[in-house]
Length: 153
Image (cartoon, rainbow, N blue to C red; front, side, top):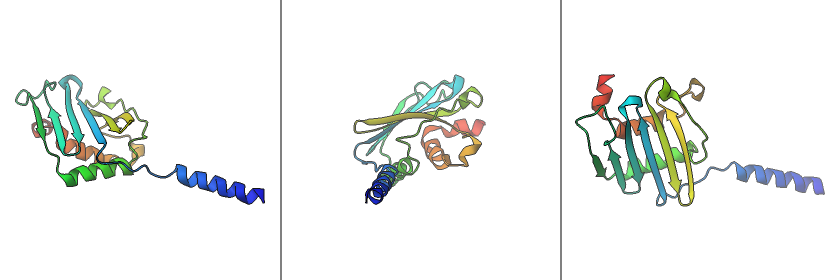
């Protein structure tokens, strides 16, 4: 009798511990720093209904030298929250040091309520990832990197 109860208990613990954490969009906030080697840093701060881009520390973009606040469209915000959930970015432990070689990495800090996580991703993720973070990096690329920087590469 004890054995079936034990098996059910282990199965219950296994199922509940592997469930994805749902993110409350109203309490979600993400801060991103684009680390560009000698070019400095571009910052992005996203929360519901607000997005702030800060180019003041970017040394390679003399024409963009200020801070911009705007509204991130609701569908884009929801897409970001879904990506964070699907990739389980609130729990990821990762530190890519690719800026040592390629010059572009993102430092991400995610906050939701009292919980937070931070990690770095390179814009050329390790081959073992099989493109897992490509959509997330593309999303950040659309808002972080001035298009004039991309045209120079």
